[in-house]
Image 1 (cartoon, rainbow, N blue to C red):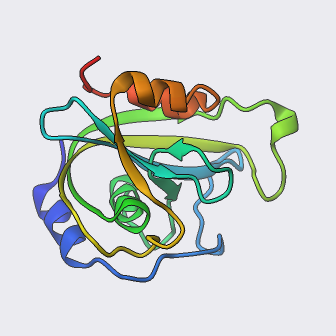
Image 2 (cartoon, rainbow, N blue to C red):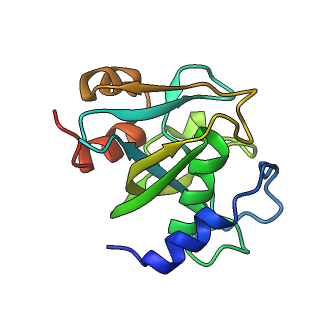
Length: 167
């Protein structure tokens, strides 16, 4: 499970400014970008909250780079949930690491190989105002709708499948 004191501290220190750039990005021992994200579920675990991708359109899970000033991937994931989706959430489970499944020709210096770490969270509150509200919308989807939305994003589908969302 999770450290409740740390989770409480994270919700108290929310900033209205989203982090940008990769100068503080953490990288793994093989040069892969370390990415943290959440699978945000409704309290009854029947729906998942997704956000609009800032670059490619379509729906994605809130995720982003784990930065050097963050003590854990869980802390980074909670920050990303706030910045991208405007949610206050409670971490339920660490869903583990997911290897980047993109083909080599889909990688670039701007889009390097990544290692993903996802956490299942329960959404406690959706704020009306959040850092990336002007570039991302959010939407609740059923498992089937989310699985279809993630058909070209195997890392997101794997995270969804590891969660306890009702199918």
